[in-house]
Length: 129
Image 1 (tube, rainbow, N blue to C red):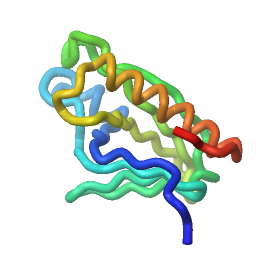
Image 2 (cartoon, rainbow, N blue to C red; image 1 turned 180 degrees about the vertical axis):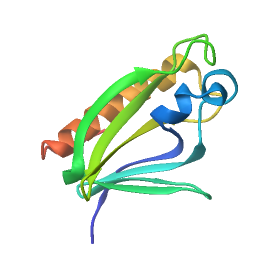
Image 3 (cartoon, rainbow, N blue to C red; image 1 turned 120 degrees about the horizontal axis):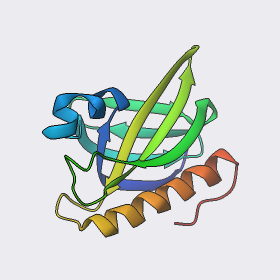
């Protein structure tokens, strides 16, 4: 059985294409709300309408970015996870948070902590967060 290293009960999902669209820049930056989990094998986002499971060994890049200031005047960070499955490169944007009402500065700290956890798992280190 694969052990879950870290979970977040509230996480938002988006894509680079969505946040470049009119709706993504001006109306709603996310495409789904769900849960995020990390194991030594995969990163998984699960919601009622969307499920994305990314094998750790398919991840080719992890970086942080922030949503448009038009949509979020106070800087809100996300995790950009780029991965390659069957020769197709995809990028998802994840914003783990405690709830929709969590202050942006707390969410940004959580985003940074998740990036650190992801990097340690990818580089085969143990995650203690």
